[in-house]
Length: 102
Image 1 (cartoon, helix red, strand yellow):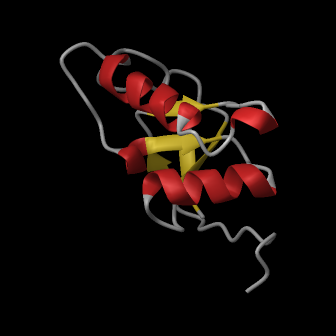
Image 2: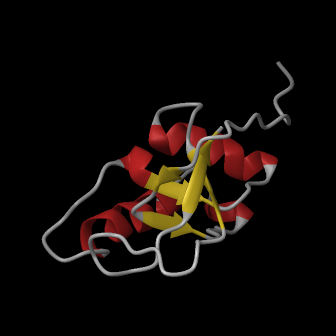
Image 3: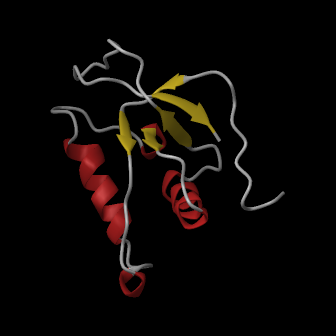
């Protein structure tokens, strides 16, 4: 399989939180900084709720971002969000993103 290829399923899946971008300077990569930031997001995004790694949705990633999302979520089928449908809401009252599995 081409490591640059992204394969998407057609059925949308609800996401709790979408990550538009996360960037760490090259000299500070491999120090778990991005993972710690996303862990903080998962624990504080919605009061009284901590969601799983795999419930984060990412914007369409670069090849480095794809490798990070794969590593962080523990699966090659991490979620990628598309623009939210007007009026859709999640349990925290925040507009949901539609997501597709990769």
